[in-house]
Image (tube, rainbow, N blue to C red; front, side, top):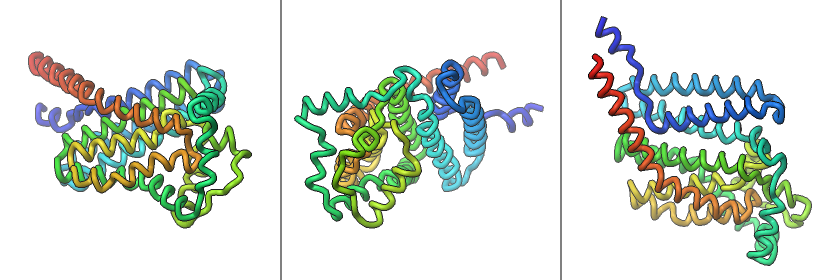
Amino acid sequence: MAQGEARFKLAPLQATDAIILATLGLFTVLTLLFCQRMEGWGWLVLKNLAVAAAYLGCQQLAARVSWGPLRFALRLLPVSLTYGYLFLAVDKLQLIVHGRFLDDVVLRLEAMVFGGQPTLWLERFTRPVVTEWMMFAYMFYFPMYALLSAVIYFRDGEAALEDYFFTLGLANILCDLGFILFPVAGPMTALGNQYTVPLTGYVFTWLGEWVRGSLQFPGGSIPSPHCAAATVMWAMAWRYHRLTFWLLLPVVLSLYGSTFYGRYHYVSDAVTGVATAALAVKLAPLLARWWERRGAKREAQAAGCG
């Protein structure tokens, strides 16, 4: 009987699992509390619950796999996809506090600081080659996520990968909360008819426009999750593989500029995205250690009861 109980014992939750499930829970509670201000709120609740159940199933499966590459894949895919889902799920929650987008505040602030709107000013420098490089940097965010995960896991092991995932998740979720507390639609929504120079380029420009039209929505702007996540990735590269850090230098710096050159974000979004990442990098080790101490205490209590 004892062997059977041990065989089916649930694997403990990592800090990454806790922050993902807590955010799904928070979004569900907010949806129920503000359901009168949201369309399709019932469907969102069901999706949140389904994602939580699927995530837990994958987490338990990954904990029982011993072959490294498969264990890595079973960890990478659910974590990455769930972070992506949370970004999409927050769309419905953006206006529950203010009831409108606050682009006018950002536009006034940037006019005071820069004397105009930088995304419009940059039109004079728009060239197909420049646009293609910027769109390459913007799109490199997606493979960079997985490539750096692999470098960290196969070089430094699971603990380092969990550090990476948790810090990245904390930054993403702080951004998600920012979309609710200070909703901003973004330049293309607020200023779309003022742009007179099209963003023309080649393959990566096409991909960047496809992402804009298929995976993005008005909002999700401040802090910039693109800048926040890229900064965390760069910081983790510095922590675990310095050569990768230096190789990423031109791409990450260009990625920052691409967010407002490509009219995905305002400059303010990029700046607050980097600041959010810096906060996540500082807070993540403290929160992770707290979670580990909590888990160790629970295991000691369970052993004492046993």
